[in-house]
Image (cartoon, one colour):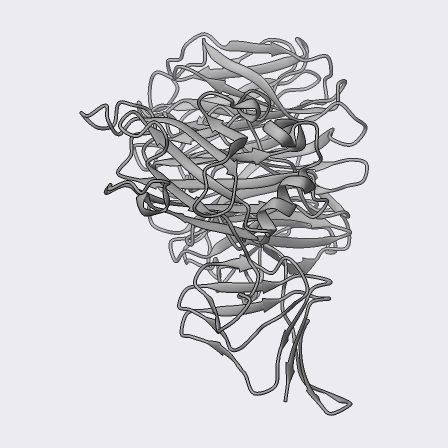
Length: 604
C-alpha cells in the first residue's frame, strides 16, 4: 500500500490509498486445476509466455494458455488440446519454425503413450489432431526442441519394467511424419528426466537420469537425427534414485546441468567444459546440507547477465526458490530467493522478452506464473541505501584523469550483509583490456575518513589489505568494467576489525567513508567518492538523482525532487516528512515507491 498523508493542524487526512506491489516479482494465477498439476512454459513469437499444463479437474486433459501480457495478467481463454482419457501429464513445449507452439506429453490411459500436438495459431485456438509417436509404455517426462533442420526432436524414457533413453526425429514441422524411434542408451533404468538441447555444432545433446548407476548421464549426438552419437557420459554418482535434472547451454556453448542430490539434500550445478561433457567443472552446491533443499523439480535458464539461474521447489516447506549464479559455472551463487511457500512441482523457467525471468509452477491446485521485475528477481534488494560518484577531483590531493565511476551499496533486511557494485570508466580492471599499464587497477577499497582527508582501509576489494576478497570473493566483469559482491562483518579491517557490520553502516551514515580506486599511475588513488547515505541534506532541496532507499525516518528541510529515471523507495517502518510550505515533485520517468508499512507525510 502507498499511504500519502497531509497534516493540517491536529487532523490527519488520508487522501489516497493505492495498491503497490513492493516485491521484485509478480505472481499471476493462470487456472485452478483442482490438484497439483504439471506445467511448462516457453516464450511465444509475440514475446508473451505460453503455458501448457495438465488439468486434473476434467480429469486428465492437456490444456494450453497464451498470455497477452508479459506477466500473464491478461491472457486468452485456455484451449483444451487433448481430452481422450487421462492424458496430458508431464508436457514439454517449444515454438516451431512456423511460429506456433508444439507440445509433447504422456497419455497415461492410453498405455502411457508418448503423444505430440502441433498448434496452427500463436494462441493455439486451432491445432492439428494429436498424434502418437510411441504407443508405449513410456515413462516419465519428455523434452522437445527444434533441430537445425527446422523439425522437432523429442527425447524421453521408454520401456517396462526398466527404462531406456529414446529419441524421435520429426521429418516435418508438425511431426505428422517422423523417423523410427532410436534407443540411445539401453543400460538398465536410464533416460528419465531427459532434457534435449541443440549444441553449438547443430546436433542434439541430451541429459538424463541414470537410476541404476545412481547418477547423471549426458549424450552428444553427432548427426541431426541422432543416427550417430558419442558414447554416453556418466558424470556423477548420486546416492539416490530420486534425481531430477534440467539442462541448458551456457554462453560458452557448453552444457550446464542443474539437479538435486536427494540423500544429501543438495541442489547442485555441473558445468561441462566441452560439448560432449567428457570434462566438466564441479559439481557446485548452490543450496543444501539441511532438511529443506531436496526437490522433486528443478529448472535452469541463462539470465540476461549471461549466468545461469536455477529454480526449484524445496520440500520442507514447499518453497518456490530461485538462485542466481554469479559465475558461468555457478561456482559462486547468490542466496536463495523464495516466492511461494505452497509451491508444487514441476517448475519451468524462461527469460521473457523484457529480459527478466518467468516461472510457471503449481500451488495448491493452481497453475501460477512468476514474472520478475529485474534480471535477478531481487529488484528491491538492489535499490541502494548508499551511493557515490568516483572522480579524480575528490582525491587528496586532486588527480587530473579521464577515469570516473560510481558505487552503490544495499544492506539486506537482517543487516548482516551488504551487496555492492562498482562501475569504472577508462580504467583497466584485468590489466589486459587496454594497451597501457598506467590505467591498470591495483587496488579498490573503502577507506574511513571524512571528505578532504585520507584515511585507513576498512574494506578491501582488490589489492593489499584486502581481507574480504579472501572471505567473500569479489566478482570481476572486465568487459563491463564492474566489480560486485558482498561485504560481511568478517571482511572488515583496520579499526573495524572484529566489529559488527553495523559499525561500517554507522560510519557510512555519518559520511565518514569513501571508495578509492588505485592504479599504477596513481598509487595513492586515481578516483575517489565520498559514500553518501540515502537521506535528505541538512538544508535546501533534496534532489534525488539516483535510485535509493531511505535508510532512516527523516524530515526533508525543503522540497523533495525525484529526477528523471530515479526511484526513491520508502521501506517498511520508515517515515518521510515534508514540512509545511514544501512539496514532493517527481519528474518524468522518476518515481516514489512506498512499501507497505512505509509512510510519506506532507504537512500543509
